[in-house]
Image (cartoon, rainbow over all chains, first blue to last red):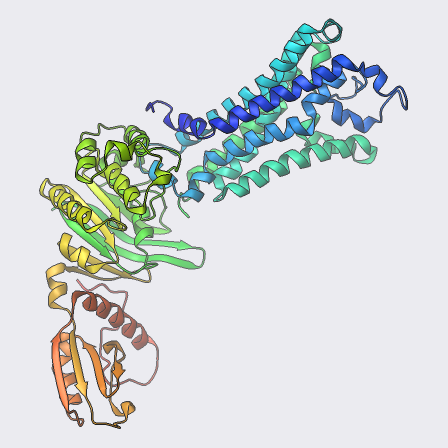
Length: 273
Length: 324
């Protein structure tokens, strides 16, 4: 193991099997969505009941409202906000987030690492880099599957430009990082990996639920701004072919704020139970 | 002589609980210094403050003149540390651990091969995941990683745990060589004989407080005397005046005591006024001397409480004050 970025490599090495599994799973899931989109025209999906799905369904199509679930971008967007996709991303964030600090504190291995000339900032930086790498790998797998499907299917390609697929992928990474920021802060202050995994689930599940409720119930519609999923609109990105920079900026700002909090907390904590 | 390790009023609290309190300690260059105490006495907390894993609540720790937290980057290349509860990554091999930790150390590791040979870690052993290792094997890897970069100061928390007697011999030889080469060794243990064998001086901690700092030779001198007294059948045990610090135990009509040497003559005079049928006095073992320190400290704590004076009292009044 090379000295350069040794902590980064260690985190990835220890989670390599999980990462490979998630990558394959994510790729396979998006291939399944493509297969569904190729075989069932989405405009027929709601033909028997309602043409226009309820507004709360936007939460499931990955759109701020401009794209219907009953369309190709809506269906592909649904594959990128599906609970399976979210669960895969949260697994990466939770696992690598816990590995940042809390897992080593719980296991006691922090005592071996941090009695070397390694600053706490370096520990956090390398472990954050490993988390970002994991998210990039999994998101790229999903995005690549969609891109290949779109490129290979003229009907889909007509409705969804490849640039739009790439933009959705960038936004997906933004969402993962948005959740990762506070998760890293929890890890930096935590003593148990379960605290970090729990926080990851809470940020992900509560974030999704808040967005869903805000779209379904007009009285609390302003709550949607508190959810990272409000800023994650892959269906809209697929239609426009561009990354919504405002939304991406919000997602990345949360990540940076969480990372800064993590650095602050880590610098002030005891590193042993 | 310059202090390599200097603790001044070192205190660490965990909320309301006290880990260590007002610890003052000075270890000189080239010393092999023992740090004795039972589990939970504060040994590991002290050591973690010394290596920068814990920040003191108050007081200071300085190692090689550096603050373990503020000067972490300058201090850690010069120290070797074996944690008391050594935890390794189960899926990594021994060789991967040594490579990883050596490289994180950022200094050459000239002694790795030699240490592996002397501690009987074969290439085959090192190629296996440490999850398959016995406790003793893991401890060997821990010792190699602590010493492989030839540090100036070696801090070892319960280093012989799990080592078989032959490997313990090698360990003591390594400690001795490190000291002869001018290095400083700080060795924590709850086994007195281990400290007696390796160390020149020893600090004893109890409930987070320093009880004593003594040369091992002086500790031997100060060891308690084991007194055995036999009484006639049916003699009332409650009629024997005893001090709490003497650890009295009855076995039938035989009373066993551990009496500090400076109290021995007075104690015997008083006890022999009783109808004693037999008496024997001998030097207690070093382990018992260690226990005697504890009992003495406990007796001192008792004595601090306001109450009617008991026969045999008269020990120093402040248990927090180390005996130097």
